[in-house]
Image (cartoon, rainbow, N blue to C red; front, side, top):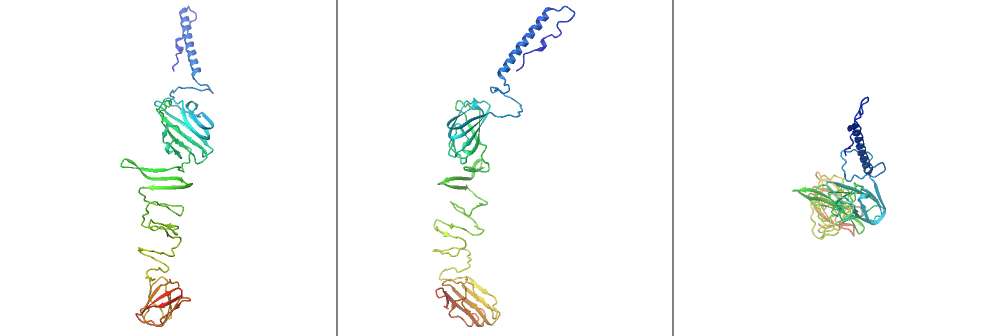
Length: 403
């Protein structure tokens, strides 16, 4: 306020020395001095009544302090102590309050002023010593409450002990009449860890559309996570060795760097099992494959293997070991040779058939089984364009000529 004290209405040059002076001048000066003392008394009294001295409280009554720079500013802390049950956050106790949960707390607000063109911000610091304790927020706390981790309805629970700090804001509302609406945010939780569900949205045709949702739930004591995407383009990288899909997996190629572990299941075939290397495959119906490469025998339709071994130039005096994953062997030479040895497959399957053909004459041919195998009906001479057929019987460990 502007002071009413006027030092200019006192004539400091009166009375004038060496001459008669009117007594009115004395009276005017005395009157003005008295009035200024009265003004000073009233203003000093008002300052003492309303202004805070060091260590005292100053009530500004919603007065605006404009264009101010503060140094060393701090909030007064109101500490509830260790509490449980119904607790009231009272405006007059300060904008920063703290409590330790001694049990679950049901919070309410009281004493908040009517706000017109004002924004109000308060903070609540909570120490949680037991994850079984919860906070129930007042019904007026509604904006952004669902984003607070582990919150259902108005109740927030905690998965870890420790200190949690919440900030609540509101504008232009009447708290005492119950019409206040608060927005809440949490300012202490680890930002690199998302607790609860997460939705990632974008705008399509001026409408917010969810692209990806990630949820984690406690299902019978086990952590279950789901990632849901309407359309997925890119890579899914798993640190572990498994991926579980509730829908369909469509891919041009499914590539495993080492092997596929576990089961591949379909609604019709519930147990196609592959652990490590596929050593056997049994199909009761039709198997539709583009290319099938095997290192051993594939048992199909009476034991016939359709792989072909072609030797472009067998040598005089040399030998040829027939492969175990073939059904046909064609031996060619550069013209007639005197001698050559043919050794039957080392690891044949029971019922495996080998058809043998020569493009040129071998005058003296030695045909034998591998290791302890017996080769019945072995040729001793091979003629040009001559062919023969042998079948293997595992019990007798012998080859039998059948054609």
